Length: 148
Image 1 (cartoon, one colour):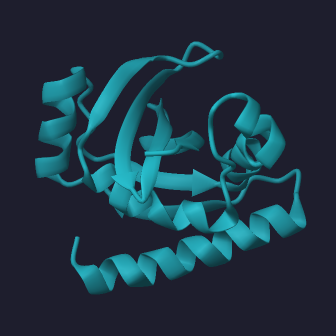
Image 2 (cartoon, one colour; image 1 turned 90 degrees about the horizontal axis):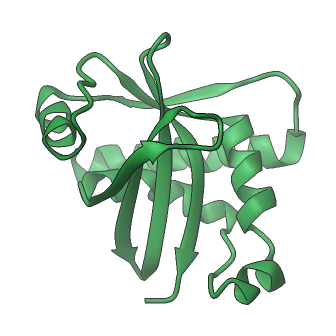
Image 3 (cartoon, helix red, strand yellow; image 1 turned 135 degrees about the horizontal axis):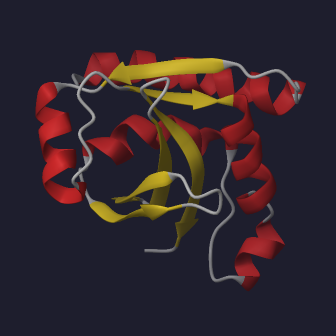
């Protein structure tokens, strides 16, 4: 993705995250980040075995709220040796997944397949996305960060 495209996308993500945190709606809202390219799908398949051609990377308000409630408290995260996720951290998602540094593939607590990315953008930041086969979505599961 080009720098100008990333900046526009980051602005959309910032607006979406702000609305999700401020609204706390019980109805799902989605923001499509991008369609997985054939090249990206090939890299993901080589590292995980998941065939994600035709999938879309999305974030939803529930994933944003889960991340903030689970990893947004400064004191709680410090006790875990981590840093609190801030609203602006969601803007890093396009950069995190571009790193292609997939460090885990497995299942989440609900038994769904997930992919975990790690990137160093100031600090170490981790981004987990869940594979939803019916909708063909890679959707935010959680994010957290640690000091470099």
